[in-house]
Image 1 (cartoon, rainbow, N blue to C red):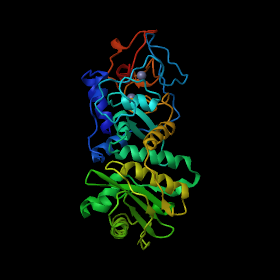
Image 2: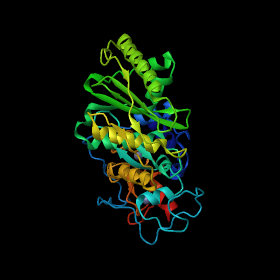
Image 3: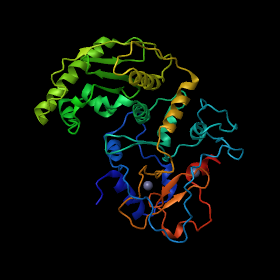
Image 4: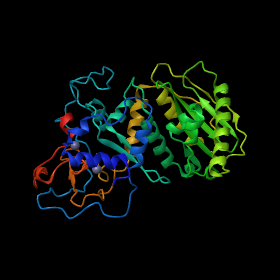
Length: 384
Ligand SMILES: [Zn+2]
Ligand SMILES: [Zn+2]
């Protein structure tokens, strides 16, 4: 049987012959913070293996094209005319100029638009179209997008292996959870002594993000609030206490001594402030980027200028940091055929070149398009 929600979800799709229209339905909670269930699902993704993704396929299947295709940005693509968000970067009726524009102006789907590798962990980060759209101007950026971005930044930096990226769910529990909740976030497999620091961010009442930096080399903890007016030294002092207790809990429960002897001190990094209600996520992403860049030094100040281009630039960075879309299923984000169905095959969208497991789309063999019959994914159907 399946050991993950992802597997069970796929099984459900197959059992009921559900169509690829499922990609239009919301799989994830709407709040910007991630639920525990979401993490369980994410954990279900498999790491890349050396085995081939192709099985022997029936004759009727289209021949897979391995050439990298990019989203067609030519004259034939119209931006969606029924997008309600007035803050969309492209005005109604104009043509999307880039892949980011195309993804931002299209109706939200559950298509996986980026897969960012994680060298040390068993799973990659997968980012869905709906999540990616939270990067649009004036929207609250959801935690997955921020984590995906920071992981991509860490992947580019040589010594970033010495910085641990603490997920925002665990960060929230450590800083604001009850003893019982904290005890369930042991991070059993992590040995913090292998790291010189940890970065992450924490959600405040589901409407705000603060950046958190543990600099183990100097015993300092920084809680940085993009919004003006909070007492950051006091926040950092509380965090220092909470993390001290957290590492003691791990010693008591797991016998792990890592980082338990550190006497955490509150620290302060000066910074510019967000000028609107929604830029906290973008600020935190920039703070993380600057921290990674300076690491192992501590940044003296975070000088962040919120501009129209900032979110777009970061959206492009996420897409650039992703595994090529030739290499993963755009439904489940997995890079190999699921091992549970021997008749599973891949199908490629004629327009954007994204690949899907027919199994993930709930597409029975009889409905798989015949050879030379083009097939279009839901994203391209909505974009055109
Ligand atoms: Zn799949
Ligand atoms: Zn497509």
